[in-house]
Length: 514
Ligand code: C2O
Ligand code: CU
Image (cartoon, rainbow, N blue to C red; front, side):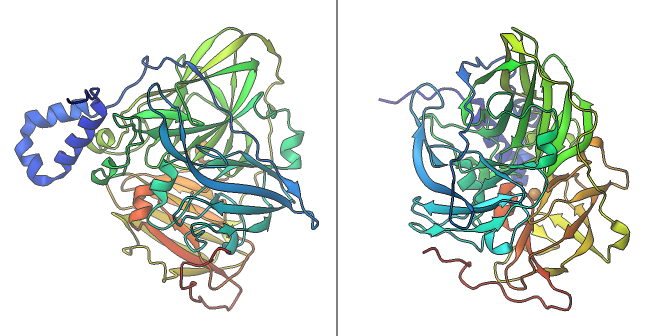
């Protein structure tokens, strides 16, 4: 007896791509084969999703305040299973639950303490993406949390209100750990943002929207095996939002704020609404913008965030879609095979029959002071090529460079390949100065911690290293296409006091749990 396996265009696309990137296969395929492969290498789910599941809104993480006034959170990493689709439940990993984690919320000025319990049976780490914090609390590959242990980082939150996130960062295993479900949103609040007339009631008019591509095998399990042969790793052919398959969100207000996070390992999304409606882009990775920017598309590469406010009418239905990318600046062949032509129906936004009136989006949001690049003393160049940063593969024992505390640096990021990369820097939020010599487009103006890098292009960014000098404990900078990162496209840097020398990273991958 053979079990029938449903036809899945998904698989075919990967196999074809695998064949195509091998030169001999390419020769054999010939022009006709190439044409067929190209034509079938696109995924398009527009109009095919039934949107029958209410969007899961991750609960806000509970916390207590300890004797020293620290806000204490407990996060347990565990395995589980979730019913995403009809049929078998899917084996998953999550924080305090089956899949993803609670939304953490803390205000600027608060000291937070996390007790991270690892019950997964293997070593991982938990990184606070976008957070300004000491390198020992960062949760990068040196802060291993071994199986069965607890890690307890603490720091004072001191940065503008923003939609940050958290995810594992074990060297070489990040893609797999995130793919299985380990990720969550971390919302920072501050007084300025609290005073603005923006939608801000969590789960009522203000929603995290964590968008992830996943592939399911014939048994509804996450398909982790096929990524090895693509240029960018696993490209899932189905979408989960906050861990919900085919989700709808019923709005009860005339405006909703969506905190979009591209939580995929490798895929670039190009979000817009199916009726072409505009929305206000109010925030980027590291905080609110100076003023809203009206647009009808927002492109996000892996790990990038955007906060948008969109109008809703009573009783209507409109779909948030990820359109074929328009701004990858990549050759048509790579665009097609790295998922840039794919179209996904992501989330159906429904207006309730009657809606509560929301205030208009303020014309001015917050101060985004320009970094003083004139006083910058250091310009560094980084080339991303293959799986290397400046020709080198990540080495846990090598600190690549040191920056001086209290200085503004300019980094020139060059994508030396004909495929896409992006770039993420730990500890700081940066400002994009130039993209290929031009002033950055609107959606890159504002605090960023991750930026898309055009193939063959140059992107200039500026950042300030304000605190936390430590000659021995590095921060990471890397491509956030997780497959590239895992393969070695990552470097390590330390923040130094003036005159201090780069030290030595800890031997055993750092922290031992207790
Ligand atoms: Cu979101 Cu170094 O990672
Ligand atoms: Cu990359």
